Image (tube, rainbow, N blue to C red; front, side, top):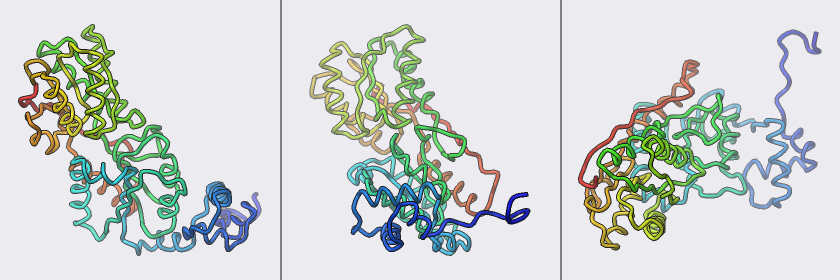
Length: 341
């Protein structure tokens, strides 16, 4: 029999235990936990390593998680503010999230951070000021957010790049969506088809490119007309110029987001290429950008607002103790035909 008798559990790690593990004072650990800037990077790294090793959670977090008294949920967006406020995809996701939270007692805290070398976001999520978190636009390398799931329940919008059985996410089948867009271009008689991808450190960028390549392979067409962008208009403009310089006989283009497709259309116009006569274009999202572009976009519809609603609903169910929540939640896409293809 283990010492302590049947049913005994090890004591929760304390501030003092973290201080001993990191070889610093208790006051220093307290400064790190409370986000004080008066800590050297070396000490910060040592204390964070000790916190992770011991799985330490501040007492106030334990109290608030037990009592559910914060009634707050964090929305974490690892992007810069320009992209967050400029991309209609985020507006639709947030609209869905707030629609679900309006039916509950929870309030939303927004955290936007394109880089977080001091792990402020992780410390915030662990500090007990929120009961759970929603993460959208997750990139490979944002592993600290996955790690924070050990402290608070987290639901991801989009499949995490390193998917595991532990993570809960809501997404669309981006591979199928990429295939749908490419197959439509092939069906309209296009043969020199290219793609402008999203970032390849995100599952959406990787999977939509995978769908493009699968469909091109089935049709026996070359899949070398590929340029990578960053889901921004400026990134798409630069990528489309590179692509046209390299593949001047391009006659079809799948762009991995509607916002980027508007940038591609401007470059095609600048180069004197008519859409859809010379180059047919298909986007992805079916966001307001698809209808506000110079030429209404044929696009792959993803139910962004419904995805936000579902994310918030899953998290609220988790916080209520529901053990039947599905970890892998995939929503359908469909092609919407308009003037660009």
